[in-house]
Amino acid sequence: MGLNLPIKTTGVKTHYKTLIVSDVHLGTKGSKSKEIARFLKQFHCDNLILNGDIIDGWQLKKSGSWKRKHTRFFNRVLKMMENQATKVYYLRGNHDDFLDQILPIQIGGLYILADMTYESNGKTYFITHGDIFDSITTNLRWIAYLGDLGYTFLLWLNRVVNFYRMKKGLPYFSLSKFVKGKVKQAVSYVDDYEMELAKMAKSKGCDGIICGHIHKPENRMIEGIHYLNSGDWVETMSALAEDHEGNWELIYFNQIDFKKMDTHQEISIPSRMEDLTEIDLARVTFTGIQDEELQTPGIQL
Image (cartoon, rainbow, N blue to C red; front, side, top):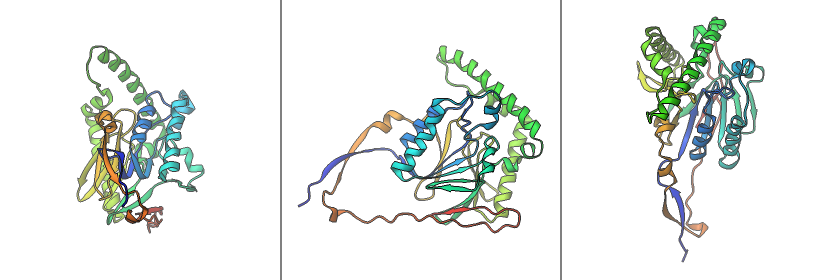
């Protein structure tokens, strides 16, 4: 007779099929590298997609600096690959466009790509950072740099404002989000941007599109296309998560109850190998999108 041994497991969902993060902007003062490292330590996933602007090459060329906490982010990713057999897909963004010199490339379980298609539970998603659909970033690079400078200043001012709010016991306030919501041109730009991405997904015969770039997390339908944006790790500190049934959700770092995640409940496991059941593991294959203008690798699970 086998002896059942109690082990500890978390009482909340911590294992996802796929996690997607973008716009970490490592190398800048605004990057929440410690927070995302803690986030990735709490959650396990079969696939981790780093959807662009993970390293901010633009700022590093100017006034940015690389610190130990930024390296810790990649140490966490490497541990996920080593200890959890997580496959990692790093897609280039406009701020880490230096990757253009080496992509596409595969190193073990790490894939560095321009963009990709993702097939899961009978649905196909086109995944891209999103800057290729941004006419300002693509065609008028000097204007993009000016916008980046203004955004950097706004983030600096945001830190000052929240320093005093914290001393008064007030909650965090996103000055950048407030400005974006008040400026009509910004609101119109975001709407146009999301609509263009949805059109692109439809033209490729995809069920949805997943992007980042504009630092605005989203999970909604646009004219029959599932539009998903992972947000950023400068302000919103958000990520996209897909469970094993194909359901997508946005997870916000500030809404995670880490104390609850640390509470445990007992379960029983059989002590004999013959009592264990077989588990079918997902198979991963790469396919290509047949498109005259763009051919991209894909993942099928």
